[in-house]
Amino acid sequence: MNTQILVTYATRYGSTQEVAEAVAATLRESGLGVDIQPMRKVRTLAGYRAVVLGAPIYIGSLHKDAISFLSRHREALTERPVAVFALGPTHSPTDEKEWEGVHAQLDQELAKYPWLTPVALELFGGKYDPAKFNFSDRLITGLPASPLHGMPASDLRDWKAIRAWASDLAAKIKPALS
Ligand SMILES: Cc1cc2nc3c(=O)[nH]c(=O)nc-3n(C[C@H](O)[C@H](O)[C@H](O)COP(=O)(O)O)c2cc1C
Image (cartoon, rainbow, N blue to C red):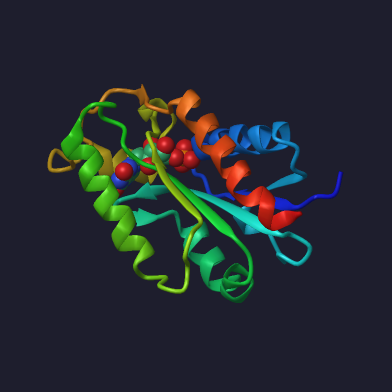
């Protein structure tokens, strides 16, 4: 099967990579040819008919690899369908205030790229595991003033919703690929 789609992700602790893998697997089950790569390793989008970008939000910003990817591949991204997913909320699946706040963070981040018009855009819950934090995240979240101070480990990734989103995406982009 010809590879048609690139699923590419940014990650610090691996949770976005795992979501990208589930998205790629679902697209393949829908009959599409899919490659998966970390954003920092992608040199060219030539040969791909569509691109799925996945990135976590850190302190209100998209992961730095995503910011760099968007500037490096701007032209190619305007020439093919692009879908975007982000990971963020880690408090509770039902904390509406948190989800609204992260939606606003994501909208604000994407507003910096007015040329980017995703065919699908979704925010998923993230995974939060303080035991794995690097030095700087331990420092930031250890500050009593940090909104993340004392927050317990959590995993709000809803695999059913993730697969459903990818399956809808396959149906949406398939006609453009045939
Ligand atoms: C130091 C730190 C800051 C974070 N800041 C935000 C944030 O501003 N907004 C948000 O929605 N999620 C935030 N998160 C949650 C991450 O987006 C979430 O843990 C995500 O699943 C991490 O993805 P990764 O494992 O692929 O790096 C933060 C997490 C950490 C550790």
